[in-house]
Image (cartoon, rainbow, N blue to C red; front, side, top):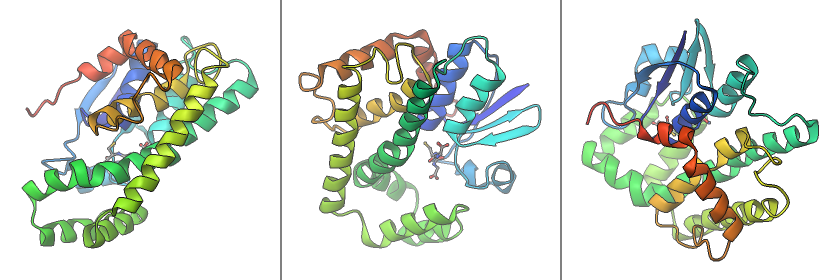
Length: 244
Ligand SMILES: N[C@@H](CCC(=O)N[C@@H](CS)C(=O)NCC(=O)O)C(=O)O
């Protein structure tokens, strides 16, 4: 049995739900409310995911964390509908895109959404003192340090501008790549597309118009339309907040 611990609107959770839908795999949902209930910090959950984040996959008692590792595990374990290129060079490119998704795109969209989305949401729920106490106990040391630093000093306009620049570079690379192949890692839809595309929705949600001006990057715009048209994308995004 496959149980996915996930949050309805988390991009990393959506990556896994797209992969499950592409492959037609049955799974059981265990929703973790990371916003209002902070269920990601429950000791029982942290035992599964020591970083205190979603998603986590439990496959017959085998626990896997990190969305990129989860989607590759799913593809390795259920190979009937492959989401990795046959060619080993394209496979390497796919992994590079997965790396870009995590260490360039996810990292920098987090910087940009801090003032716009994170601060207003969290300030409604907790005082600054409560936020400090919560963060001091955050399980993942890197995230704990980064978030405490942000809580005390905020995110500056310069930091936001730098983050947007790094995202622009990623978008330029997407545009360039799609001039060479139909999908990001060759001519077949792959885990590269699944890892990267859901972040475009975050750019839109954060009103990052320069990143999603498709007249400037038409190939990326076409690719984004093609990803959204896939039933797997629609299924993954149709998962609604069970606590609403
Ligand atoms: N590298 C991790 C990142 C996971 C992550 O940052 N998850 C976010 C939601 S997209 C989370 O759980 N945040 C909870 C929190 O920061 O309190 C992955 O890809 O699985």
